[in-house]
Image 1: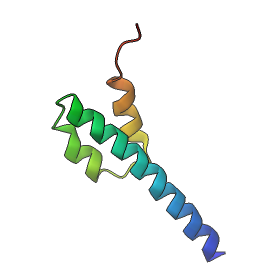
Image 2 (image 1 turned 30 degrees about the horizontal axis):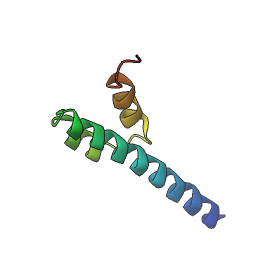
Image 3 (image 1 turned 180 degrees about the vertical axis):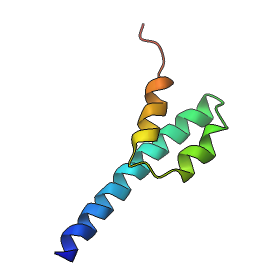
Image 4 (image 1 turned 135 degrees about the vertical axis):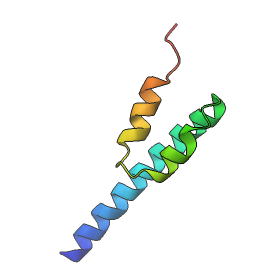
Length: 61
């Protein structure tokens, strides 16, 4: 049963890391430098980076 938990933990860490990378990239690109340490340090299972990305998405043309 421990293996299942390990796989779940690895999947969650991968999910969070991927969203963090995308959000940090956008924050740096758009000059939102104050967000970078927050996005990097807060472990939120991807929720904080997804919120940041949703709030800073470019307008639809």
